[in-house]
Length: 469
Ligand code: ADP
Ligand code: MG
Image (cartoon, rainbow, N blue to C red; front, side, top):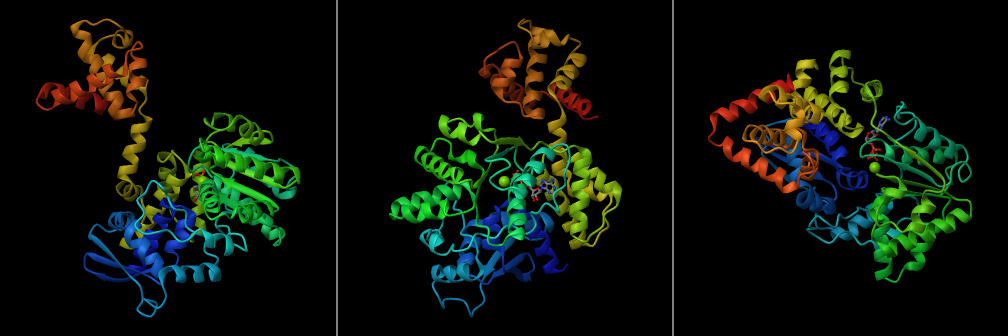
């Protein structure tokens, strides 16, 4: 098996598992340097990336490599000797950042940070030019369908008439449904039309980090200049500013300044403005005052079209059957769909196997199981239990506490929890407004019984088989 193919396949997965900024910063110039049986050595030409990769990204890299090639059990990292120790890591990063315009990494506060992140002071001085947009996120390779056509049209309109068409434009929807892609497509399209257009794209976490750093280093003036001396402001995942009053205030003023000068503002969020709790009323109403559009989950035809687009972009080809199988079965979101496709292609390249439906089933078995679970709905479970124990559904969900009803009811609660991942409070609600502790107790009880009750375990297996038949 070729190591460069293995790494290419791994990068395809990693790109979808870390943020774009982090991916570009840390994985840019990496390769597999050597393979010592079960150990894979990854080389980067940047000592700073070496630190981050080995301290922060090791588990996820190992995870992805193992998934592609089960004989891998360890990863190591290295930097070429000529860059080692010549400069301090920090200095080196800054040089690279200036030369190549590498975006500064966004530290995730919840993750323990092994070393100090690069100085955010430098992100002001080094960002004379805007962060480049991901060249893959263009309108050309955005597949339009009923789930996203309104959002797409609004973005197009903004490109045609920035600051005039829809200002602000607010795009919301669940994860992996193309919000970032659309925001960046706007940026790419506008820069193509006019390379001097000053567009600032920022993830809201980065806006916050820079704000905090600016306060700490008394650089508010620079901060304001950075965010106001522009032609267009794009802020991604704005829901994260919820509950952070000072930052909301700053965002409010930034917004007002830009808006009053007729500068276009585009925002994205996982919820509509009014549904972001702990967002100040005045900010929420300002942000929602322009055009608010959503992106939904794509239907089967759109999913298939997206897969076809991605396959042809990669210059690969896959038969219709396996492709349609993936489109039918991976329904959650486009990120997962793309991840599934990359995994299938990666495996087929690494192991040199043809992509068939069986091959797809084998490679994606865990994902398929998961998505099957999600499709089993509450009604089906109650119906199955009702038929099996010969009790009407109203009895199972009702209030009576007869002995012959209690056990089937507990089984139903157990299955709802295990097979459709319903929360305890919702299960309680569903069963005649019972408390969540009742649902918890029922599940614990069944679990306990399953340890030795052969008959019950057969009943449950039988019910599961019927559910998944
Ligand atoms: P979000 O920001 O909504 O979480 P992203 O924009 O990051 O989602 O999309 C996740 C992945 O799916 C990206 O790789 C993106 O290119 C891809 N994608 C999403 N929607 C589409 C689409 N309609 N056509 C092509 N690719 C898409
Ligand atoms: Mg996004």
